[in-house]
Image (cartoon, rainbow, N blue to C red):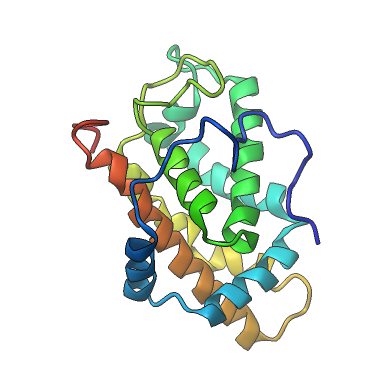
Length: 205
């Protein structure tokens, strides 16, 4: 089963030295999973989803990015400070975005996974944004847009056709979709940590 979109993803440091250490404990993670209703059945459904989406990550990210590019207030965070596109930044961050789909579906939610959630979050704040790709773009992505974009990431009209691409029954597609929505909400909850930690990234709502 395909678990990575490429052998070489620039800036992808999952499980490697230097990744941020999550302040969230395994117990806190379990309570968050309970809060969002994430079960072992959801984990199984996500693994099936990962197998289906593995060959479609580029197309799915393109759909999401089309929504971003159509809204200047969102698109600015992927551009240079002069408002011009940066192809290098777009390409490399796009590869990591694709890999996030597979990590969401196929990785165990262990300490490495928790740590990388913190790393992802920090890369949206002024603590680490732009450092990974050595670019000059806006210094942070406000938390309000990270949270609000969940509506696009979890949009059934976008996601369900991808989940249905291999002919699974509608009931199974719906189970995969519900599991996906739960894990995205779970991850968003984790990503809020550095935004709400005034020792790290204050005033970036």
